Length: 330
Image (cartoon, rainbow, N blue to C red):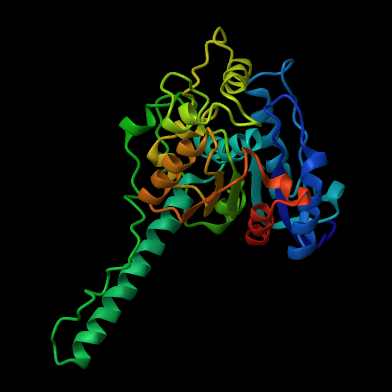
């Protein structure tokens, strides 16, 4: 086997409403990210509307991601992927979140291993706080400490997966919940290493997490005049990507990650979300961030003022708010 070096990778998925690729606008900040982090930027090119609707794009993104992280693409790239962060904006944000959902729902990653690691991390944190609390009591002659020893502990959520939760989506194997992997040992490194892994982190800007148009959120109602994503355009993109006559629900969690069940969301890697304070999709990011936090995922949402939807590329246009965001991204 030929030896290749390991390099950190930024796996960036462009936006463009599934109709176009915005690589020209993304290139300036991608070059900055690469220079600052010394990471290789990979920008997968996926098939576009109107010729290719869901699930073509996400299937292609998943195949390319798996090729990179598994090492299959090493002879072509000249390196193995070390740490991988997935980034995406707008429609690319949809695909970035959908990639994580699909990797779990289609059992491409070792779900049991991820749950075990998260459960062990939670136990270690609880034991650390318990030990700290006990030590504090000992030093004060047995009196209770004022902080309780665990006041700042972040709950990761129950690591078990119920069959009733898994039935809310159809992409998992029939009759099998994500937790039914007893035939494989999640503690075996040889097995874990043979599976594709989730990204080390996810960073999304103005992600189109919810393509369902049935119940418009307040931000969609109040921001219909957004210069980049007016209400009519959002509806047209949604109907083109998941056509009403396709037989596929827009609530499919791979089409709309907003609807992913908690048992899938608790598997997500650390997540950083950016949104415009006037973005029609703001509320979707707020809700998604809240759900990630609820199930124990380290997630942060940044709302940026005075910018339109999908603003990452506006730093070169002189927007001071975007320049500040780019510094934080780096």
